[in-house]
Every structure is written in C-alpha cells, then in structure tokens.
Amino acid sequence: MPASLSSDRDFLGYGGKPPNVRWPGGARLAVSLVVNVEEGAELSLGQGDERNEAVYEVREEVVGARDLCMESHFEYGPRAGWPRVRALLVKYGVEATLNANGRALAHTPWIAREAVADGHEVAAHGWRWETHAHMAEAEERTAIARAVEAITTAAGRAPRGWHTRSATSPNTRRLLLEQGGFLYDSNAYNDDLPYLVREAGHDCLVLPYAFDTNDMRFQPGGGFVFAEDFSRYCIEAFDRLYEEGAQAPRMLSVGLHLRLIGRPGRIGGLERFLRHATSRPGVWFARRDAIALHWLEAVGRGDLIRRALGPDAA
Image 1 (cartoon, rainbow, N blue to C red):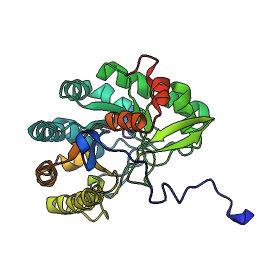
Image 2 (spheres, one colour; image 1 turned 60 degrees about the vertical axis):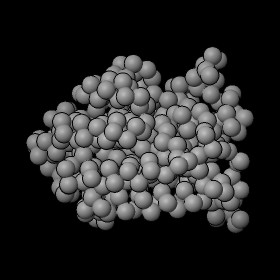
Image 3 (cartoon, rainbow, N blue to C red; image 1 turned 90 degrees about the horizontal axis):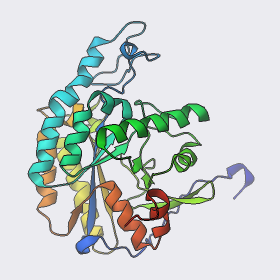
Image 4 (cartoon, rainbow, N blue to C red; image 1 turned 45 degrees about the vertical axis):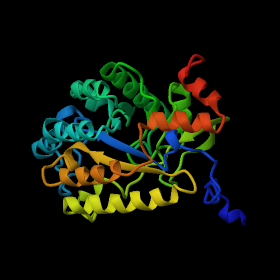
C-alpha cells in the first residue's frame, strides 16, 4: 500500500471465513434487540447543558432559550413508549439489551428496575446523549465513570457493554479497558458478527451495531414513514441472515428508541417483526452480553471474560 494510503482500517474482516461458532441450541441466527434509553440525557439548557438538542421529529434548534417542545418530545419515551415496548418484549418472550445513558436512568430509574426484573441487560450508552469524537481524554474518562456509576445504581449491577452515540474518540476503547468491567463495545457498523480488535496491547470484543435495521430511520430523511416500513425492512434483513445462517454464524441487531418505535402509529411494526421472527425455528433472541459470553467461549477466549468480569466469572 502506498504511504499516502497508510491506514489501520480493516476492510477484510473474516474474509468470508468466520470462526466455526454455533449459536446455542444450533440456532441459525442470533437476534439482538437494542432498546435505546436516552430520554433525559439529551442536551438541554434546562438541565444546565451548553445548548439544546436539535434532532427529533423535525430538525430545529432553539438557541439561547429553554426548548420546552424538545423536552416534551423526549418525555414521551418513558411515559408512553417504554410501557408499549416492554409489553411486546414480555408478550413474545424475548430478552433485549437496554442501551442506556447514565443521566437518562438517573431520571427514570424505574425503567432499569423493570428491565432487570424482566430479564433484560442494561448496557452503557454514555453519560449524556452525545458524541465523544472531540472529547478531551480527562473529560471522556469522567463521562464513562459517571455513566457506569449511574447505571450501576439504577440497575443494581455495572454495565458489561458500551456504545457511544455516533462517533467515539481515539481514546474510547482504551478508557473502557482502564475503567474495567466491560465485556464488549458496540461502536462499529462493519460486520454481521462479533470480532476481536487490538487496543492498548489487549484484545477487545466488538459486537457491531446497525443503523439500517433501526427505528431512527423514522426521523426526517430516514426513509421510514409507516410502521410497515420498519417491519418490512427488518424482516428482509432477518430472512437473508437466517438463510445465510445455515452455512455460517450470523447476528442481526435491531435498534429501537422509546420515543420513536413507542408511538402508536409505529409500534405495530415492531410487533409484526417479532411475530415473524419468533415463528421461525432456530433463532436465538439474546442479550448482547450473552452473545459476547458465548462468542468468547466458543473462540477460546475465556481469558477476556475473566479480565472483564473477574476470575470467578462463569
């Protein structure tokens, strides 16, 4: 490669030859539902932040004044969206990962308690709902620690997974190693399978996430309008990966947001997807920490489990 094209990016991945990992029970496909809990962590002058959030059902930023419209929009998620999403997860008997901001759960600790009672995982989505791309190292270290503390308080145990909103900083994975307790992070969108990366002299597990099979596409310009748009797209992705899963392991991530999919005109799309996916044999609906544990055991990296969770980790 010419010096001008020198890069640490990996375009090859497994090169079409992933590890021979079989999911529990011989499942063809692991499905990870990720319920993002961000409400209360969005930027808001009313909470002492430097500015207001500008992304919701329309794109508009109120500058120099408190945005009561934006605050009300985000409040819909915990008040009305979470009960609907929670009820569907219970109805179809699937376990999910709550991708939660620390400050969000500080406002809505009952969501964490109810999720844990239902058997779901509570992972970390940062302290505030913000990118880490330009954060100074000390600022980011503090943000990670605050998120861990708030989630541990609300959920009763420390998060095992991490996912920054949008871009990480070059320091993020090293700081997660420094914080300790993290089994995986999901700050990648480049594969349909978990994989290992090298960071600060250590191997780290990445569970890729997805922006296409994601209700964020109901936001302006995202392409989803009707509930059926979400279900049709996610079912297409499910069916393709299910077919490929007959020959090699596959993982499908589906991203959900309380204030988006939780609306009455959209929640039916989630139910149609769940009805379709749960009707197929050989599908493992799993928390992301369960996927991480299974993958690491299957590829002979129990040492990474013990590093993250302690020497007595199962």
